[in-house]
Image (cartoon, rainbow, N blue to C red):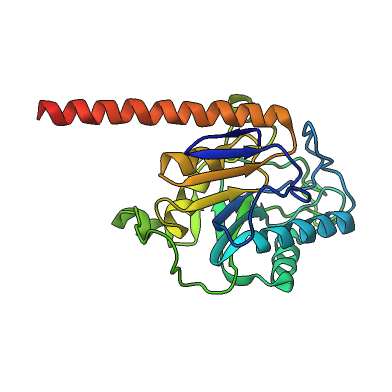
Length: 266
């Protein structure tokens, strides 16, 4: 175990081989796995063949299926498609792969990253011969293990009416995250796991990110009174995640101190 406290646990191991997580122990998985688009991670080959990538996905999906409780949910942030190395319908392929393993399909949220664009080519510029069509969106595929209705856990939800109405609309619009600001080549913004965590889990539930990276899911879990577990093969990213979790602890401490002082003044 790389790091653990009452709020979070960081496991510096490979998702395919770790034995640190018990079967049927996780309430919610929120993750964004490697997209296989040749991002320069410290410790991961992000340029597999597409066949190898699907085999890798099948292997880690199977592990996640074992770790989830029977009423556990799985929020999978993946590309809609990709064109680097050939056009591939990634979202459709990974969704089908997950359901073949045993996951049940619930819905798909479209994440519109607003002004974020990853375009590097337009194909035949201003010509109809071979243009590329690329949507600046990603998917958050919502899956579950056996039953959709959640029966385990505290039963305590912490959404307000505005959040519930907005988040149950399957088109989410908020910006992506800065690589430079976080110090990781492919971070997602804390807003993504925050919404998933509050919408699909109860207070004090266990939330897992099997590709923890910079620890964004753990930060969101901690700030919203869930226990976060992260698996990350790279020690450097584990150190970064630990720093961010500790910063979240300090952030909560200062907030509670301010709230207590405000209450005493009242």
